[in-house]
Image (tube, rainbow, N blue to C red):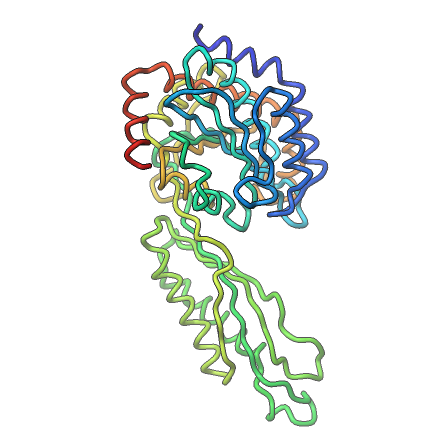
Length: 388
């Protein structure tokens, strides 16, 4: 049979898949609010003959779609959340439709090779850690391997093409209000505490390795010029190449915020706003099989130098729990960086559509390679049983 059945199935579903991508793009929804987006994906998969469950694992915008029977379960992760104010500036419309295409393609081969297909609609990748929440609630317990592909400017498909670990948190300073002209000395300025802390963070950057990242903004810093601010709230994140470096960097940044409190007399509190994102670990054999098919689509695998990744994804959490891959699929001609209006505009071009179709075929071929290789299949199934 070769790959003819999976490739031809993607071709048969090309128009619905492109329509799904364009519809998601036209109606972007942010983390945990992707109700229409999840519904559109559910409709396509229901039409394709999957057993679909919406609101899965006590997450209103999560879903699962399953088909087939067997010892091997191939999982496809579909993201569909957008960025506030930008829309699909990370191409999640392409991710969602390509994972759906791969699931439909693998369904066409599932009965012959006796394996299961499970698509997981995973909300809140941009913020909120939807995949980690689903992982904790058992969504991946019956999944042997998990796959997805992310659009970008290059075809990154190496075992060491990693993302960064990321931790996000909220900082709250509480001071005391006073009349800014009449008696400012009676106040404790929470906004000043934030200024001191951000100066300290800026100086800290000189002493952190080049691959480390610290970013944030002031969400609230006062109400009127004539009132000493009694409250300031900041949102920050820290990133490191590997998760075992994350806690130490977060502690140093916390120290900067505590310095702001010490300098001004304000109190400071910290709240972790979402699960930590772990660094991505592409499964070596699965990513090698994916990369081996790139030349057939006129693509060449590129690789990042180890430790040079700068983005973060909760797919990294999945890759720490089970064999997984998260390659980048090039949208040829894109010059913009993700998380920009320019990238969002490119995510519905013909080049984006070509990447969507190619990604669906590449993921399906990779899954089929595993299903048809008795030795590898037995190895991964055994790993799955030991994990469970």
